[in-house]
Length: 519
Image 1 (cartoon, rainbow, N blue to C red):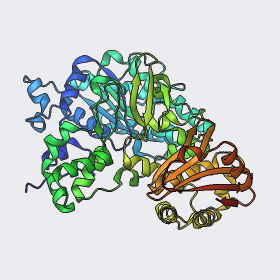
Image 2 (cartoon, rainbow, N blue to C red):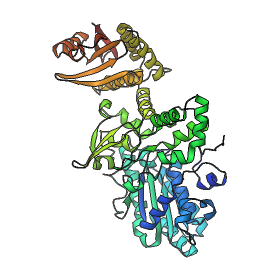
Image 3 (spheres, one colour):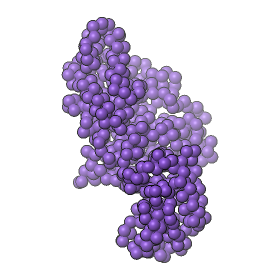
Image 4 (cartoon, rainbow, N blue to C red):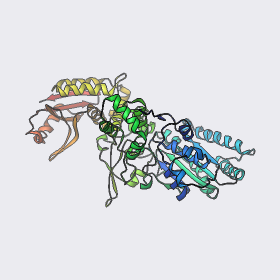
């Protein structure tokens, strides 16, 4: 069987091509970009191939044609390739936690460029120094300059929970990036990438010629792996994975699809696989949660700590394109952040209302985000999936009393500094309970809709049905009374499975289950 090499930790185009790693050809998109325009912005989640795209564009403009042999752009552009000077800036390489962090990072990059250009007399501001570098590069090479900025939003994301520092960075970046507009006649091509787009406090407010292709149908597949590309590039590795796991080839494709597919980045609804997870799964011949294990974005963690949003409303939420496109440091609705960071994706588009329906892309993302969210409230040394397994066994065996006891033990172990959140946000226990139930892996409906109201949770196993109502700073008797008065058990009256009613009261004072009733 043919052995393939996968660039699981490589984002440098030249290294990938020279060392024979598998490369998914995206150069047709690059040809379209350089043919149709000059200034672009692309937003994609972390580890989705943005840096590799930038590296590939850099190699193209540097005229390294030997690296592109056999790729689409080699055939689309058969003549001589004009070499251009390239300035590449990666803002993810530094730590931003102090007022001078961004200035120091930009100054260091400019100093390197100034040395390369032979600039000795430095202007007093970063924007003016940037302008001088562009002019010097153009003069020395006799050609307009290419500017590639990777992860432009790293400083802003790092300061999302510090409004004063955020505004300080925003002002600095706005001044720095305004050079792109001022020097437009000296720039051949410019592309900026990032995870988030801070719309209402945009650093690009003066750059009105910036073409945002984040939701553009034409570029839906510019990062990630399509179904066609999966077959064209990875069949040998998929055959090896099938052999290792003793699956058939169709079963293996189904497992990859359920685990890593399902991303949509435009109304075109082109299916995109997570490239980081696919490469790792094929490299190790094992399907696991790779993307989530690589770390939840700090930006998302910070917003989740400070939001009162009902997480069960995320999957199936409906939003406008303006909501998807804009992220504000001041907003408390995390939907746009979940979308931009890759934890939600487009599931449908209503052309008449111009509204998007969002949902979790796949099993890896859903289980991963819930585990990570639950991890914000975990007792030390406790594993979210271990807790979920314990509770799942209780429900499968028809032991609701034990289920409540395990839940109480878990909540009692949450550190008081984390539990203090419950005093501020009414949805704290709903969030914890929703995450736990979702991780259990049974047939679960949260906020189950009946003719008389919404049941907090309905859990179904092969032999049992559980109707569960929660009361914050209320009693189990109050919860059970609501179940009876609103006839929450009625929709399951004809089901042959045994029905349990669970009323659970949570206490802010104790931080755990205060009372429970089972009928």
